[in-house]
Amino acid sequence: MKLDTIELKPILKIKELVPYLKSKNIKFEIMSEKEAEEYLRKNNNYYNITAYKNNFSKYPSPAGKYEGLYQDLDFAYLKDLAIIDYRVRLLFFKITIDIEHYLKIRILNLIDNIDLEDGYRIVNMYLEKDFYNEENPRKIHNSIFKKVGSDNYNKIFSDYYVDKDKKLENIPIWEFLEIITFGDLVRFYEFFIKEYKIEKEMTNVYILREIVKLRNAVAHNNCLLSDLNKKDNHNKPEFRIVNYLIDSGVRRDFRSNKLKNSRIRQMTYALYMFNEIVTSEGIKENVTKEINELFLERIIRHKEYYINNKLLITTYIYFKKIIDKNYNKNDKNSLT
Image 1 (cartoon, rainbow, N blue to C red):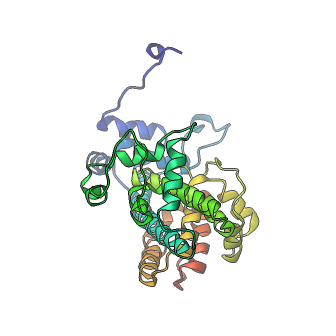
Image 2: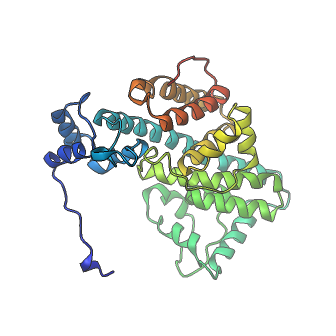
Image 3: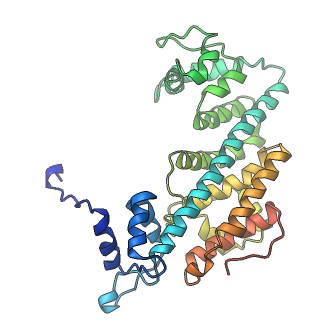
């Protein structure tokens, strides 16, 4: 199809959005139409806030004039989910950057126990492989070169002669780890453990790959809770995650259903890996406090909104089981 034959959707003005949402049977009983317009004008955009409507049911066929319209959805529910999603993104941004930081520490500790390794050898091997990679040559090199001149990396690059036409070499691992992305860090970690045959670390790689996707989503401020019913990941979950969920009291059919959703899987993997890799008790205590405040207080502040929403209730119960077992605060609050 040619681009000029595609019928473009007209852009709706804010004053036109409320009537459009009402035509989909989205109500304005808790929050008035005027308040909704003001919220859209000052606090959120139409695309972001209406993304959460995918978590609500529509009238099935046949339903007469209501067919295809939302059954139980007030604009206030969308606003509440947008706020919750914002808080969830902040939480998982913190969790993922902590995982990234402590992965670097884990690699350095592993290096420290390898007699053959001086902190340069493995980096030189990795950079050589990258420079001569036939499928995707110089991927890491190009990523690093983009950071040359950045104020954040001036101190590191001032110690090296950087020629974009030549292979980088002799960057010590403690500096190399600071100038690569989280995704490249996980790829380097995989290369490192394969080179030194540290097989027990390999499961971490599979889990970390999913966490990288989550980190990218929160870093770009993408909605996390907009498509919780989507079944877009049918890969077999890692056995350590399965055992983690069994230990958390999540039954087989329940975990199988929830882990088919990519976002739920990514957040599950991050909650697991955080406690596995972070060694600071202070950081663990602070994150545990934030998790409990979010799940046991903010998320259920308006639990009456979701009393008829099986998807949101079961998703909450799923994470609540994980939190009760692994992020220990004995509070009996619940969405149900």
